[in-house]
Image (cartoon, rainbow, N blue to C red; front, side, top):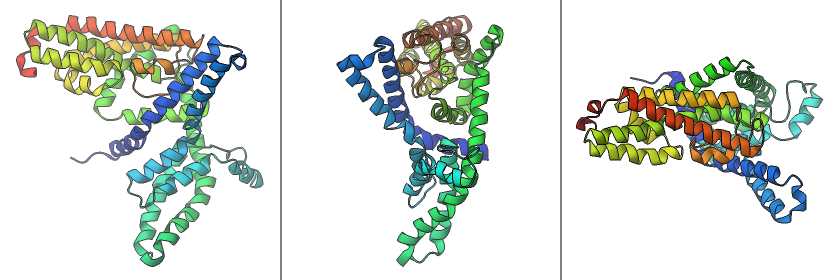
Length: 371
């Protein structure tokens, strides 16, 4: 059965952003440690060693964060089969150049057109159009001049509508999405925060099963680019923590059921799970036992409710386990307190997932047939 267009789009988004995860993770951790150093040394300029380390961390962060649109443009064109994916990178780079504001001033479009308008959303859409147009031009362009004329003509035809239409429209959509994400975390009601946090975290594992997580993950760089932090990533990160608790419980229950092989599989899968690699637990353990999967969702939900109420935000995204701790330096209070809140929320999800699994899953359900 063919995938739906929406599922196909999410698949493309995943293929574009997955290669960027190491960069998001590295830049986010560097930013997190830099923020932590500022907390430890308020007058950091007077501490030479600390200031040198801080400067290196900022360099690492700035080597990627300001150029996200460039990388997104490149990988989008590459994923879609462009002969010259560098054209997508060039279009993405144009998005963040100061000359955009000069052009906006000349055309009296400063209210809707500005440097960085649309961000990664604009770069993604623009790269899709660049690829489609380049492939069409390549079909009828003589090979003798195609290597020079095709990329030049493609970019020339795209750049004006990209700047005047795609960037402002994508900027409007990005602002709308970011305000929506902000609104989810801005409710004053304690009970609403608990409910939203629970539902968001508990639903993330089912969303992963259907491959729709990339639609949510695509919002992270948009918010990071606009504000410098991500609000819902700490909440969604609890989905992996709930699975870790369930993994430990399933290993224990399987051992009691004398299913040693499945116990070893479950225990082995929890190790990468603690580091934020959820696939081994999801597809190798919890999905084979519906009650265990439900327990992991409940564990995730309880941790997500905690994260929403304490208001932790992150400076990056990537693997959602303990490796994410240095990125959890935003939100209310100090950077150290924010990281401690994240660790507490992670532990709450693990413990809840563990005990709910013990309550729901009976040893007889983990028969040797699961091994």
